[in-house]
Image (cartoon, rainbow, N blue to C red; front, side, top):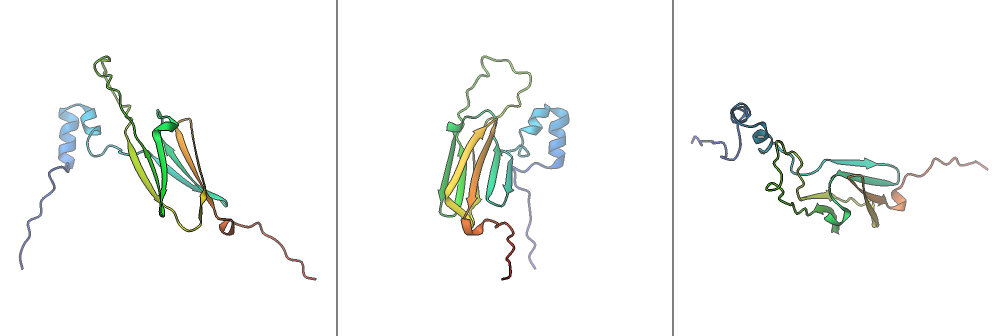
Length: 146
């Protein structure tokens, strides 16, 4: 039996490295590590007529987003060009981060591809995916016996 030496990839921080960064450096150094969020938070809601995807993306405009359907994938992306204001502003702390992202969602057979809509209000992108008519829940109907 041969033994294979296993090593941790160089770009993965250990818990000890994170603690060292926290106590020996600036707290933001820890936040800027691989533990930071790379894409916005997302909610997916289902009701009887549709699915609604909500993406929290404050600080953007509706023109920053691109929404495409490719085969059975819904692809939502935002291209953000950051202005470098670091020369004109002396930040003591800087947490605002507007980054580009791309998210993909599998579209199953119940979605009507011709009835997909989107709106952007108060920092939330809402994409509504209407269900096909035959997939929508029908109201309970009582059949009278004649």
